[in-house]
Image 1 (cartoon, helix red, strand yellow):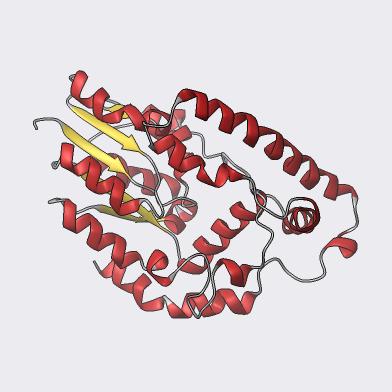
Image 2 (cartoon, rainbow, N blue to C red):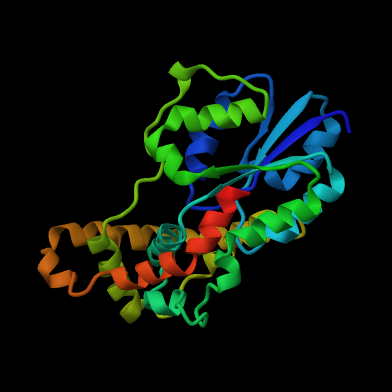
Length: 277
């Protein structure tokens, strides 16, 4: 109970990979447990004797389950969470899904009538704040992804101050870790999958696999062997699109701007409440 524990819980598509690769490993006087070691983080904390720990693992629909589980072991944990304006966050999530073989339109993914794969409850950020307040006695550090873009070192200072750690500015690379693919590449892949891969690969269960200790190593290897060929093929298809004129590929935008404006307006109050909190 004397150990200080900080838990960066995401969200996904809010610069998490940048923090995990370019910032967290360079923090001083704190034991950083990476996303790859998250499955063993409880054992690591119990079996080692550092003064403070930082865990990072972004969650979406597993949010409450994982926070509840972790807090049952370490109720003193302080939470770090990053939000991104709703329309931009959902657009980024959709593009990631398209890159992984999802070929249905954006309105099947989310629509203003709450009938898509993503529901209003998934996009309501105050629900996530309430979950944190439910299980944690400490006020979380709430950050805006947009501030990382505008003033990265001011953003990183907020984190280091919250967790009582320091870092050397010269060791931090501000380069993008995962560059996004162009709209042309994603539309081309979407058209390819509509014809040749109508059912998206099962690596949509990848996060569940990495969170679940009960899944055997044999199943993890089997999953990887199934996932990797599709990953390689999809990237090959996207790179192939670069030699094809845009006029032959892009007939309509990947996401209609009116749909994004509707999302922005619908969740305007939620966006305001989060930062009032």
